[in-house]
Structure formats: structure tokens, C-alpha cells
Length: 432
Image (cartoon, rainbow, N blue to C red; front, side, top):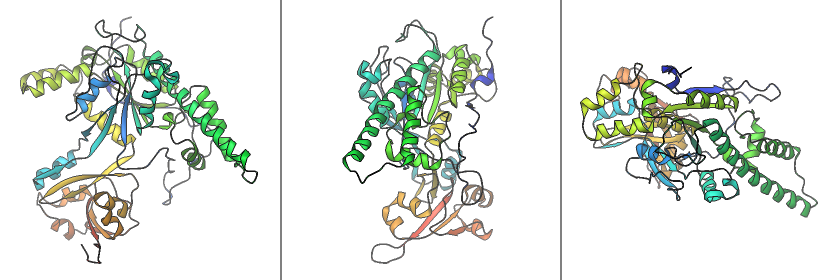
């Protein structure tokens, strides 16, 4: 039977597996709410997402669409990208746009997602095929992954394996990442065990062997470390200590790149296969989209063809559909566990990126280290309170009158969308 497209297939799909029963639940947070999720990788404000996949599937084209200025080579042959291209793209946010429309400052600065375009991997990359070791090292340097998968048929765009099979492609990339991690894990384990043999007074704790044995078994079975297993907080800490460079610990978003025709109709035969593969391999977020459609839309927008743009958007089956690029950027930002607070005034409206869970002094330090070192207090309000109470005025007066303008100390956890003003001691003891 022919494939019958479904509109719902283009909604981002989050698929997950049942929680294993034999694992210890993460500890609850201090307020007694939902359990805190242990976190792999580094915590920071300048984290990067890398675009990863086989050659000739649209990685550099997607990078160019998301980029503000940099243009990566995008050609129909393997390894046209060798050195990683880097750029940043603004994170869409209606709250930021609203603040800018109220204050109309001369300086406007949104939040940015940092992106890296990494050359295509092929089977055998972990053993050096197709410059694979260099490319895998580039993946180790990023903090999260957009795993791009080809979901379109085209005689004009070659496939490195001469046929279109998304499940096979996903297996190929996953296996290469696991093999790279396994080689890294074995080196790290051997080094620590050698150190113990040299020093009779040293002894590795039982947790070392428990974690390393589990990690090694998973990787030998091509099982990414971040999926299909619920790690305890002590295990996460031990992994971050011993093997922080593992690629398969990084958060991943799967992007299914289909043709413009398939995107307009609402799906094709390849996308359900991708969703099923992800579901059977630990779960994750799948976002179907079309580089071809996004390029057509971008060209019309750059040409100022309002009627052409409207006609293209009207051709989409289903209400409310359009460009998927904003969703991709937002999901990448969220996967890195980043958020931002606002500063707003006559001179500037700006988003300041911080790691989720940042305290008030840590958030202040993003502006300047002096702000963190001399932190006194934070004056802030929630974005929703400001919009509800300020009546379009360039002032916090009505927010303060309603008792929604708060003073917070050094233990306050800054919330996404807080509008902040920091007070601190300057060098020499003067209050600012």
C-alpha cells in the first residue's frame, strides 16, 4: 500500500523507554519535589551543539540556514567539510521581542545557541576511515549533538552507501560513536589500574569497577551511555570524574531531513522508521523537517516576495505549520540545560545565558566577574508579572506597587525569564 502522510508525524516526537526497575532512583531535591536528574558533562554558559551524521545528508545546508553570517561549504560529495565550521544563531523568544518593543533601546542582544558543523562520518570512522578520528575528536569538543538523518530520496544527491535506509544509517553513526568511546574508556581504565599497581598504598573503590564494567559492557553492545540506563548520582559523579570525554554521554536531538514535497504533504515512509529506531534505542526527541523547504522559504524571504512566501506556507497540510528552524534552535538550547534572564532599560535589552540552577551571584558573574565577587543582592521580577502589571510603561513602578518586585540574596536560584538588576560592591568598597 502507498504511504499515507499524517500531519501529526511532523510534530516533534519524544519517545522513551520504561524506567528499569533495578536502578536506584535519583535523590529528591531539597524542596522535596521531583527527583533531581543527574547531569553528565560540563556545566557552563558557552556550550555548543554539533551537527553530526553521514556525508551528503544536509548538515552544512542546515548549518547555513541556522547561521547568521558564516557560510559552510555544502557540496554533493563526501568530506566537503573537513575543519569544523562554527557559528551562533539567535534563540527565538517572544518575551525578548516584547521587552524590546516596550523599551525600544539602541542596543538589543538576544540569547544565542552556538553551533558546530562537523564533517560526515562513515562506517569505520573510529578506526580512521574517511578522516574519522579527526572528525570524532571534533564531536568530543561539543556539548550536545544534533544527529541529522537522511529521510529523502534523490538521484541527484548521492548516498555514501548507495541506498536510503535511515535505520542502517542510525546504526552506523551510533556504532562509530560507541567504538570511539570504548577505545577512550579502555585507555582511561588501564591508566588508573596501572597507577594502583605502582603504588601499593592506593586502592580503587568498588564503585570504580562497577561503573567501568557497566560502561564497557554497554559500549561493546553499541549502547550509548546516556540512553537505556538510569544512573545514580554517585555513578554520574564517577563517570564525570573518570571519562568526561565520552561522546555518547552528550544530549542528542534527532533531526529527520525529508524532501520539500514530503514536508508539504506531511510525511513519508522514512520518518516512522526513524521514530521507531529511536524508541527502540533508549528514546529521544525526533524533529522531522526539510532543508529543501527551509531553503525555498529563506530565498523568498530574502527576495522580499511576500506573496510567494504566503503561498508556500499555505501549501503546507495542517494548520499552524511553518519553518521548523526556531523549534530546532530552542530544543538545542534546552538540551544543553541553558536558560537566560533579562536585563532591560533605556540603553539595552539583553538576554544573559546561564546554566539552569545558577545562583544569583553566579548569574551576576556572567555580566562581569566583579558583579559576582562583590554581590550584595538581586532585585528582580518575573517576566509574566512585569507584562501583566507594567501597562506598557518603561518602568518598574507598577510592579513595585503590586509587591511583585523582589529582593533576593546569594542563595536565590535565578529563574528563566527573570528581569534582573544586581547590586554589588565595586573594588574599593563603593556600592554600585
